[in-house]
Image (cartoon, rainbow, N blue to C red; front, side, top):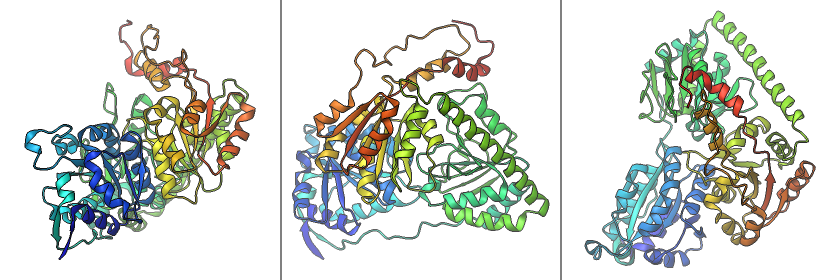
Amino acid sequence: MTVMKGKDALVTMLQAEGVRYVFGNPGTTELPLLDAIQDSPQLRYITGLQEATPLFMADGYARSTGRPAFVNVHVTAGLGNTVGALYNVFKGGTPLVLTAGQSSTRQLLREPVLGSNMVNVVREHTKWAAEVIHPEDISVAVRRAFKVAKTPPTGPVFLSLPWDVLDQEADFLDLKASSEGYFRVRPDVAAVERAAHLLAGAHNPVMLVSDRVAQSGASAAAVRVAEQLGTRVYATQFAEVNFPTAHPQFMGMLNLSWPGPGVRDTLAQADVILAVGTNVVGQFTDTPEPLVGPQARIVHLDSSAWEIEKTYPVEAALWCDPLAGLLELSVALEGEMSATQREAARTRAATIGEESRRRREAFQKRLRARWGHVPISPERMMWELRGALPPQAIIADESITCRGTLMQSVDFAKEGDMFAIRGGGLGWAMPGALGIQLAQPDRSVVAVVGDGAAMYTIQALWTAARYHIPVTYVMCNNRSYKVLKEGTARYLAGTDRVSEYVGMNFHELPLDFVKLGEAFGIQGVRVEDPEALGPALRDSMGSGEPRMVDVVIDDTVAVQDLQAEWAGWFAGRPAS
């Protein structure tokens, strides 16, 4: 038995769990914890000036290390400020422990200022949420929180920590960390055999991957299976490197935010769909017909039992760790595939490789055509970025409408080379890049951020300057919410209506990120001349300091192309 205050037990448990950073925004109800951190040289408190900032920093840190991060915010108001960010964290499955100080349990019945049932506030967007009532329960609650957060499918948890629980003494039976190393769950043998039989006999298989592949460290295993099958590979989400982007069988991301007829056609051509570490398929907008037709036979391999057969029926369900499952599936395919099937797979792979070559040639043609364009074209911007990146650089991507161009320009070979926004709420990359840099101090981190997205968490620049975190911020400044303009073009496809883009333009008062950076203590440069872009990027990335590169880029919306893509969905709709 060990006698100590609850706050000291909490710090002891954090140390046992290997926590190095406490990401937070302080308040009165957190004072006991802050006082205890002062006496713990193993813990460093990193302040964010608005609560979404520390939560997204923790997200970047946890994703880059693969271990749960720890966050502490201020009671109901502070917790409320995290909810939008928490939605992203939950949807992405980031393992982290979010905590908030609470009023003393003696005051809760009296409904104190800033008090509320915080467990109810976050319950929908956490794996587990609880309020600690007795100080002696802190060790149990913290150990459980870390265990739940890192158990696949991983995700955030929440603990409410009342003042008196932290400030009272108690006898603690144990202060041991959660256990490790039991997450590589293997699939059912019969399910593997069934999956191998279906896939070996497929004439046109398609593989879908998402972030639970990268979280499992399974991208190389995914490549192995894809090559065995000779299958096209698409990402339903690519916020981490789930498959090497330069691989000839990788065909890019499916646009499930605005899934056009092309997405339907891609999935309709498949006789067997192998979904790995992904949902099938989570579209954002309505479509006149399902994206996955009744003819599709689905093999779903995933650590999330909830996602398997959530929407579409499957013929083989493999509930397992993605790496363990893919390795066993690969072995089963070796024994299942006939010589004829292997030859057919090689032929398919060659055809797909030729398609990939033509796609790369088309991008290079577009790049050459727009090389000298002013304002700077997204193609020129991302190609210059490619040339300026230091070896082993990590990209934190929230470039939004420039994302496809970034993915065509920069090759990402393995897990940990790139992280991106997930969940849909904006504001991740500004603070997320800081968490990644803290996790990977020996690698350069470059945040590529849309101007609209950056403003949701611009306070992260202060944190970068205050703690000397040397992230280079590269702003895609198109002076608008361009993603909404593109969405408007799709929405109006098949009509003769012309949009004024209500609420979507910054042209009347453009954002100046160099001045914003200076206000927070960060040097920067604004780039409008395409010839100046490469030198500006290399200078900033080599500075060893946080820097800002504000790149003014073309904001043209390809309305006709977007509407031509979408018109097929809405043929016959009356004009308005």
